[in-house]
Image (cartoon, rainbow over all chains, first blue to last red; front, top):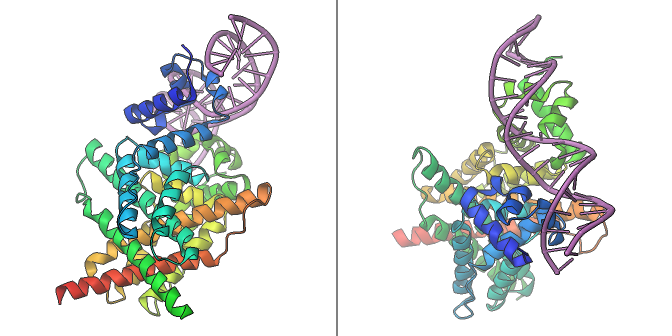
Length: 190
Length: 190
DNA sequence: ACCTGAACACCGTTCAAGT
DNA sequence: ACCTGAACACCGTTCAAGT
C-alpha cells in the first residue's frame, strides 16, 4: 500500500477532523495509513513541514477565487472563504495558528489578499502591510471563535454565543482602516 | 529547596529565554528547579495552565499603565508595551500565540485595551470587538516580527529587515478603522 | 519511490507515600 | 504545603536495509 504525498496530507486532515490536533502524531498518522511512522519522513523532513502542508491544503479548500467586484468586496470574499475553511475542520484554526507561529504556510491566502487589495486604488506600499493585518485579524478572530464554539459543544454553555456578525464587524474595522490610511497617504502627497 | 508558584513561573521564563519554547518541558523545568517533574503538578494542573501563567507574567512585565492622553495614544502605549514584552524574551511571541490558541491568557492586556478604548467617545458596543481586533493585530504582527528577527540572527540574512515602523503603520490602520466605524455608527443613529 | 525494524532520546501525567 | 519514586502510555527522529 504505497502512499503519495497527497495521500498523507488527505489522511492527516481526516485524522485532524476526527480526533483533534493533539492526536495528530506521526505514529498515529502512520498507523492510520498502514505504515511505519518512519515512512512519513520520505515525504516530509519533519512534523512541522507536514503540518504546514496540511494547513495549506485545508486553507486551499476554502479559497474562493472571486476576481470581480470592488477591492473591499473581494477582500471580504477571500476572508470569508478562509474563515469557512478553518471552521470546517476540528481544530482547523488552532492548526493554522500553530503553523503560522513557527513562520510557515499561508502563502496562498497572502497572495489572494494582495491581489484583491491591488485591484483597488490603494498606494502600493500599503498593500503588504494591509494584507498581513487582514490575515492576522482572520486567523486571530476565527481562532477565538472556534475555541468558543468547541468549548460550548464539549461542556456547559457558559458565555453568550459568538455572533457570526462579529466577524463582519471586525473585518469592517480593518477594511475601513485600510481605506482611511490610503486617503491620508494621498492627502499627504497632494 | 521549596518552590512557590511564583518561583516556578520565574524559572520557566528563564528557561524559555535561555533555551527556547521547545526546550521548556516539565522535566527540564523540574530539573532546573532541583525537583522532580511531578512536583510541578502541585502548582499547576497541567502544562497548558503553566504556560498560560508564564505568558501572563511575561506580558504583565511589559504593560505600561498610562492613564492619560487621548484614547488612541493610550491604545498605542498599551500595544507598544505588549510588543516590547513579547520581543524581550526568546520565543515570547510564539508562547503568547500558543497560549492564546488554546483559549487561555491575555486577560490583563484585554482589560487594559478596553479601559483605553472606553476613555474615548466610542460607542460602547464597539469596545469589545475593537479590543479583540487590536489584540489579534499585536499578537499576529509581533509573532511575524520575532520569527523574522530570530531567523535572521540564526541563519543567513535573506529578506529585508522588518522595520519597527511597520508595527506603527499596522496599528494606525486598525486605530483608524475603529475611529471610522465609530463615526459611521453615530451617523447611523443621528 | 516508498517502506521496514529497531533503536535513541526524550515526553506529560498519575499516584501512593513521604516531610 | 511541597516533594519523591516509580510507573504508564506515549512522543519525534534517525538510519541501515529492503523492494
